[in-house]
Length: 254
Image (cartoon, rainbow, N blue to C red; front, side, top):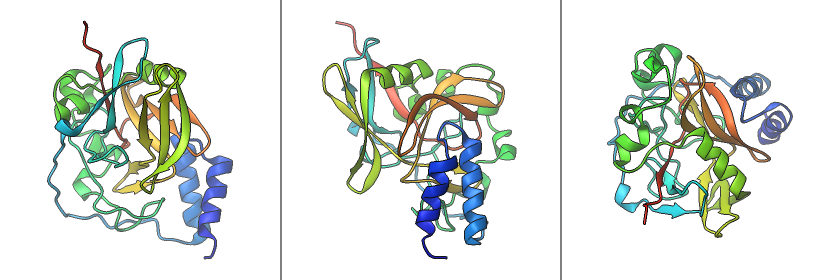
Protein backbone atom coordinates (compact mmCIF):
# COMPACT_ATOMS: atom_id res chain seq x y z
CA UNK A 1 0.00 0.00 0.00
CA UNK A 2 1.31 3.48 -0.91
CA UNK A 3 1.87 6.27 1.61
CA UNK A 4 2.36 3.80 4.47
CA UNK A 5 4.64 6.28 6.25
CA UNK A 6 1.90 8.91 6.14
CA UNK A 7 -0.63 6.43 7.56
CA UNK A 8 1.82 5.54 10.30
CA UNK A 9 2.39 9.15 11.35
CA UNK A 10 -1.33 9.98 11.27
CA UNK A 11 -2.03 7.11 13.64
CA UNK A 12 0.78 8.16 15.98
CA UNK A 13 -0.18 11.84 15.95
CA UNK A 14 -3.84 11.17 16.67
CA UNK A 15 -3.77 8.14 18.96
CA UNK A 16 -0.18 7.52 20.03
CA UNK A 17 0.96 8.61 23.48
CA UNK A 18 4.51 7.63 24.41
CA UNK A 19 3.52 7.61 28.09
CA UNK A 20 0.77 5.04 27.43
CA UNK A 21 2.01 1.80 25.88
CA UNK A 22 -1.56 0.61 25.27
CA UNK A 23 -2.14 3.48 22.82
CA UNK A 24 1.14 2.76 21.02
CA UNK A 25 0.31 -0.94 20.71
CA UNK A 26 -3.12 0.03 19.36
CA UNK A 27 -1.50 2.23 16.67
CA UNK A 28 0.85 -0.57 15.68
CA UNK A 29 -2.01 -3.07 15.36
CA UNK A 30 -4.12 -0.57 13.41
CA UNK A 31 -1.25 0.12 11.02
CA UNK A 32 -0.78 -3.60 10.38
CA UNK A 33 -4.51 -4.00 9.75
CA UNK A 34 -4.80 -1.02 7.39
CA UNK A 35 -1.74 -1.96 5.32
CA UNK A 36 -2.57 -5.67 5.46
CA UNK A 37 0.95 -6.46 6.65
CA UNK A 38 1.73 -9.67 8.49
CA UNK A 39 2.45 -8.87 12.16
CA UNK A 40 4.36 -12.10 12.77
CA UNK A 41 8.11 -11.82 13.19
CA UNK A 42 10.45 -14.73 12.67
CA UNK A 43 12.73 -14.94 15.70
CA UNK A 44 16.43 -15.25 15.08
CA UNK A 45 18.77 -17.66 16.82
CA UNK A 46 21.87 -15.59 15.98
CA UNK A 47 24.02 -15.02 19.07
CA UNK A 48 25.82 -11.78 19.88
CA UNK A 49 28.77 -10.95 22.07
CA UNK A 50 27.64 -8.63 24.85
CA UNK A 51 30.29 -5.96 25.18
CA UNK A 52 29.96 -2.63 26.96
CA UNK A 53 32.68 -0.01 26.97
CA UNK A 54 32.41 1.95 30.23
CA UNK A 55 35.85 3.45 29.67
CA UNK A 56 34.41 5.39 26.74
CA UNK A 57 31.37 6.66 28.62
CA UNK A 58 31.53 10.24 29.85
CA UNK A 59 29.74 11.52 32.97
CA UNK A 60 28.17 14.84 32.01
CA UNK A 61 27.69 17.52 34.66
CA UNK A 62 24.47 19.40 33.90
CA UNK A 63 24.67 21.49 37.08
CA UNK A 64 21.62 19.76 38.55
CA UNK A 65 20.63 20.57 42.15
CA UNK A 66 21.05 16.95 43.27
CA UNK A 67 24.57 16.70 41.86
CA UNK A 68 23.51 13.91 39.49
CA UNK A 69 25.83 13.29 36.54
CA UNK A 70 24.32 11.69 33.42
CA UNK A 71 26.06 9.25 31.08
CA UNK A 72 26.52 10.58 27.56
CA UNK A 73 25.12 7.37 25.99
CA UNK A 74 22.85 4.41 26.68
CA UNK A 75 24.01 1.26 28.41
CA UNK A 76 25.63 -0.92 25.73
CA UNK A 77 25.93 1.95 23.23
CA UNK A 78 29.11 2.61 21.26
CA UNK A 79 28.29 6.30 20.77
CA UNK A 80 25.88 8.90 22.21
CA UNK A 81 23.43 8.40 19.33
CA UNK A 82 23.66 4.59 19.29
CA UNK A 83 20.61 2.73 20.63
CA UNK A 84 22.60 0.35 22.79
CA UNK A 85 20.97 -2.54 24.66
CA UNK A 86 17.40 -3.19 25.78
CA UNK A 87 16.28 -4.51 29.16
CA UNK A 88 13.11 -5.67 30.82
CA UNK A 89 12.68 -3.97 34.21
CA UNK A 90 14.78 -5.43 37.01
CA UNK A 91 16.91 -7.60 34.72
CA UNK A 92 20.55 -7.04 33.84
CA UNK A 93 21.14 -9.14 30.72
CA UNK A 94 21.64 -6.73 27.79
CA UNK A 95 19.78 -7.75 24.63
CA UNK A 96 20.27 -6.37 21.13
CA UNK A 97 18.09 -6.67 18.00
CA UNK A 98 19.79 -8.60 15.22
CA UNK A 99 19.56 -5.78 12.68
CA UNK A 100 17.89 -2.40 12.35
CA UNK A 101 14.68 -2.32 10.31
CA UNK A 102 11.75 0.02 9.88
CA UNK A 103 10.04 2.09 12.56
CA UNK A 104 7.45 -0.58 13.31
CA UNK A 105 9.60 -3.68 13.40
CA UNK A 106 10.07 -6.32 10.75
CA UNK A 107 11.44 -9.82 10.30
CA UNK A 108 15.03 -8.56 10.51
CA UNK A 109 14.47 -6.54 13.67
CA UNK A 110 14.16 -9.40 16.14
CA UNK A 111 15.56 -11.03 19.24
CA UNK A 112 16.17 -14.69 19.87
CA UNK A 113 12.88 -16.41 20.73
CA UNK A 114 14.02 -17.44 24.20
CA UNK A 115 14.89 -13.78 24.93
CA UNK A 116 11.63 -12.33 23.63
CA UNK A 117 9.99 -9.67 25.79
CA UNK A 118 6.82 -11.56 26.71
CA UNK A 119 4.87 -12.02 29.92
CA UNK A 120 5.72 -15.73 30.12
CA UNK A 121 9.44 -15.11 29.64
CA UNK A 122 9.44 -12.22 32.10
CA UNK A 123 7.87 -14.38 34.80
CA UNK A 124 10.97 -16.61 34.65
CA UNK A 125 13.33 -13.73 35.50
CA UNK A 126 14.62 -12.27 38.76
CA UNK A 127 13.14 -8.89 37.84
CA UNK A 128 9.65 -10.33 38.00
CA UNK A 129 10.13 -11.14 41.70
CA UNK A 130 10.94 -7.58 42.73
CA UNK A 131 8.40 -5.95 45.04
CA UNK A 132 10.08 -2.56 45.34
CA UNK A 133 12.62 -0.30 43.69
CA UNK A 134 15.53 -1.91 41.85
CA UNK A 135 18.51 -2.71 44.10
CA UNK A 136 22.14 -2.87 43.00
CA UNK A 137 22.06 -6.58 42.17
CA UNK A 138 19.19 -5.97 39.72
CA UNK A 139 20.49 -2.66 38.36
CA UNK A 140 21.28 -2.89 34.62
CA UNK A 141 23.61 0.12 34.75
CA UNK A 142 25.66 -1.05 37.75
CA UNK A 143 26.02 -4.64 36.54
CA UNK A 144 26.99 -3.72 32.96
CA UNK A 145 29.00 -0.55 33.58
CA UNK A 146 30.33 -1.00 37.10
CA UNK A 147 30.62 1.32 40.06
CA UNK A 148 29.58 4.16 40.50
CA UNK A 149 26.97 3.95 37.71
CA UNK A 150 23.31 3.31 38.58
CA UNK A 151 19.92 3.44 36.87
CA UNK A 152 18.16 6.78 37.42
CA UNK A 153 15.16 7.11 39.72
CA UNK A 154 11.92 8.67 38.52
CA UNK A 155 12.83 11.71 40.67
CA UNK A 156 16.09 12.10 38.74
CA UNK A 157 14.20 11.96 35.45
CA UNK A 158 11.88 14.68 36.76
CA UNK A 159 14.86 16.82 37.79
CA UNK A 160 16.37 16.40 34.33
CA UNK A 161 13.09 17.40 32.71
CA UNK A 162 12.60 20.44 34.95
CA UNK A 163 16.11 21.83 34.61
CA UNK A 164 16.81 21.28 30.90
CA UNK A 165 15.43 22.26 27.51
CA UNK A 166 14.38 19.31 25.34
CA UNK A 167 14.81 19.91 21.59
CA UNK A 168 14.02 17.33 18.93
CA UNK A 169 17.18 16.76 16.90
CA UNK A 170 18.79 14.37 14.43
CA UNK A 171 22.47 13.52 15.01
CA UNK A 172 24.39 11.34 12.55
CA UNK A 173 21.08 10.19 11.10
CA UNK A 174 19.61 9.22 14.49
CA UNK A 175 16.46 10.96 15.77
CA UNK A 176 16.19 11.93 19.40
CA UNK A 177 16.24 14.80 21.89
CA UNK A 178 19.12 17.11 22.67
CA UNK A 179 18.77 17.81 26.39
CA UNK A 180 20.54 21.04 27.37
CA UNK A 181 20.99 22.28 30.92
CA UNK A 182 19.36 25.61 31.78
CA UNK A 183 22.02 25.95 34.49
CA UNK A 184 25.39 25.45 32.77
CA UNK A 185 24.59 24.83 29.08
CA UNK A 186 26.00 21.30 28.92
CA UNK A 187 24.04 18.75 26.86
CA UNK A 188 23.31 15.04 26.45
CA UNK A 189 21.44 13.23 23.68
CA UNK A 190 18.63 10.69 24.08
CA UNK A 191 18.03 8.56 20.99
CA UNK A 192 14.58 7.47 19.84
CA UNK A 193 15.46 3.81 20.24
CA UNK A 194 11.89 2.51 20.32
CA UNK A 195 10.78 -0.39 22.49
CA UNK A 196 10.79 -4.19 22.41
CA UNK A 197 7.65 -6.28 22.60
CA UNK A 198 7.59 -9.98 21.92
CA UNK A 199 10.63 -10.70 19.76
CA UNK A 200 10.61 -7.42 17.81
CA UNK A 201 11.79 -3.83 18.11
CA UNK A 202 9.17 -1.18 17.35
CA UNK A 203 9.03 2.60 16.82
CA UNK A 204 12.78 3.04 16.46
CA UNK A 205 13.46 6.55 15.21
CA UNK A 206 10.08 7.82 16.43
CA UNK A 207 9.70 7.20 20.18
CA UNK A 208 12.03 6.77 23.14
CA UNK A 209 11.53 4.71 26.32
CA UNK A 210 14.00 4.71 29.22
CA UNK A 211 13.56 2.69 32.42
CA UNK A 212 13.97 4.21 35.85
CA UNK A 213 14.75 2.11 38.92
CA UNK A 214 11.45 3.18 40.51
CA UNK A 215 8.80 0.59 41.29
CA UNK A 216 5.17 1.41 40.54
CA UNK A 217 3.24 -1.82 41.08
CA UNK A 218 3.50 -5.60 40.83
CA UNK A 219 3.23 -5.31 37.04
CA UNK A 220 4.39 -1.74 36.22
CA UNK A 221 7.41 0.52 36.70
CA UNK A 222 8.24 4.17 36.02
CA UNK A 223 10.01 5.31 32.85
CA UNK A 224 10.87 8.38 30.78
CA UNK A 225 9.10 8.54 27.42
CA UNK A 226 9.10 10.91 24.47
CA UNK A 227 7.58 11.22 21.01
CA UNK A 228 8.03 13.77 18.23
CA UNK A 229 5.99 16.33 20.15
CA UNK A 230 6.11 15.60 23.88
CA UNK A 231 8.25 14.39 26.79
CA UNK A 232 6.92 12.60 29.87
CA UNK A 233 9.33 11.94 32.78
CA UNK A 234 6.77 10.07 34.90
CA UNK A 235 5.24 7.43 32.63
CA UNK A 236 4.58 3.89 33.83
CA UNK A 237 3.88 0.61 32.07
CA UNK A 238 4.42 -3.14 32.04
CA UNK A 239 7.79 -4.25 33.39
CA UNK A 240 8.11 -6.93 30.68
CA UNK A 241 8.76 -4.40 27.89
CA UNK A 242 12.30 -3.98 26.59
CA UNK A 243 13.38 -0.35 27.11
CA UNK A 244 16.68 1.52 26.97
CA UNK A 245 18.68 2.40 30.09
CA UNK A 246 20.69 5.59 30.68
CA UNK A 247 23.04 5.52 33.65
CA UNK A 248 23.72 8.18 36.30
CA UNK A 249 26.18 8.82 39.10
CA UNK A 250 26.59 11.40 41.83
CA UNK A 251 29.00 14.34 41.62
CA UNK A 252 31.99 13.50 43.85
CA UNK A 253 32.06 15.49 47.10
CA UNK A 254 34.89 18.02 47.35
